[in-house]
Length: 124
Image 1 (cartoon, rainbow, N blue to C red):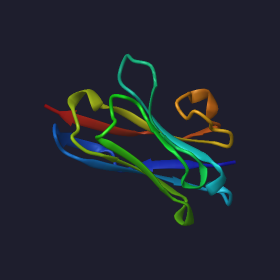
Image 2: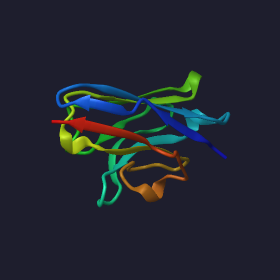
Image 3: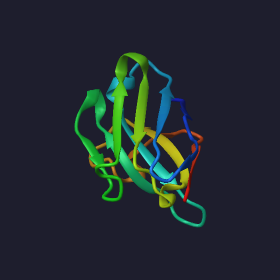
Image 4: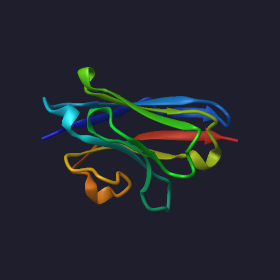
């Protein structure tokens, strides 16, 4: 069982930055692929970024490439999402997810555990 707790969300002006954190429980954190997804009001949950286990390859959705960076600290059981140049359309609840067999990283079905989410609001 893995428990995920997100933090770092908030209100920011367009062009600003936020850093989301995800704290994971469990002894085998490094063996999990980790991802960030988001869900805006009235929309389906969508993939944002993923990093494979043990700091492997990273993947990004087209709409965040060059603006967001995913990283992990296995020694601390932490995953981060650095978000720069934020836009109003980035407003959503952001979710951290963990999966033992993450391959492509961009499908929600690859993930076994989810956090409760943290709200990010970008004002224009």
